[in-house]
Image 1 (cartoon, rainbow, N blue to C red):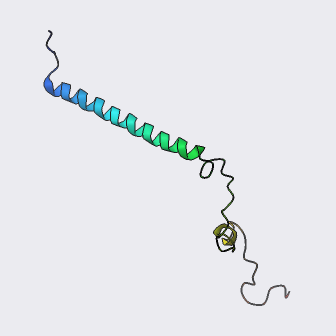
Image 2 (image 1 turned 180 degrees about the vertical axis):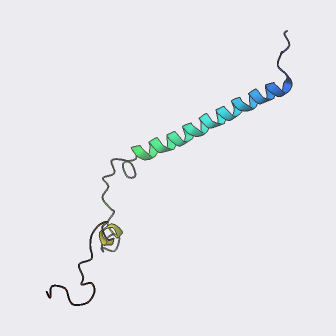
Image 3 (image 1 turned 135 degrees about the horizontal axis):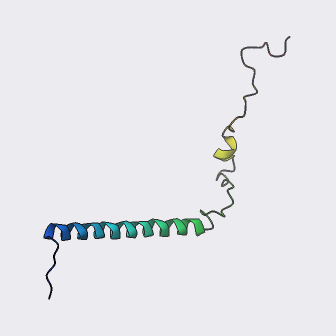
Length: 85
């Protein structure tokens, strides 16, 4: 048998680095697996259609009642002087 030429502290450092790398690979695979499952799901995934779900009580959904970005409020501003020129 041959003896190691590296000091014990160096061996422990190498072992710690390898363990951290293994942990990061395992964590990355877990996240990737969950992401792929979610993307492949026909209800929650990429091909879900993007349409908002209808309200349970038959009323408008939150997407239908929310103001659109960039849409102006058409009510009169600054009093009743709109169009009086």
